[in-house]
Image (cartoon, rainbow, N blue to C red; front, side, top):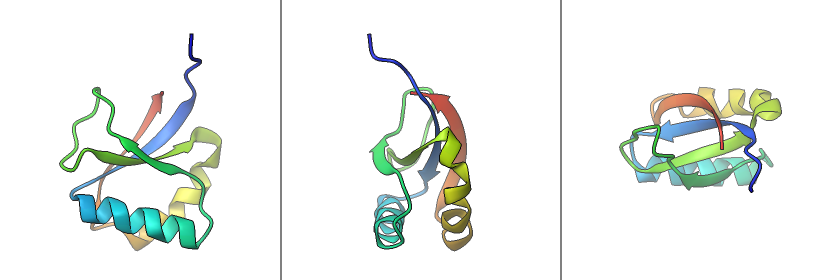
Length: 78
């Protein structure tokens, strides 16, 4: 059985917002990756940026830079 890990997810209003966050994070070496939005959550574009829970502080810069693109922030075991 796959062990679930607590992760923070950022969901987005649009796919272009999700892609912009991915580029920004790669450029600034911010950990995480794009994943499909889990079924427990609804999001407009279907993509979310996921980071392990202990790396939440890394999201601060992303949240400030992309506050208009981010739909929500979630903590889930996935």
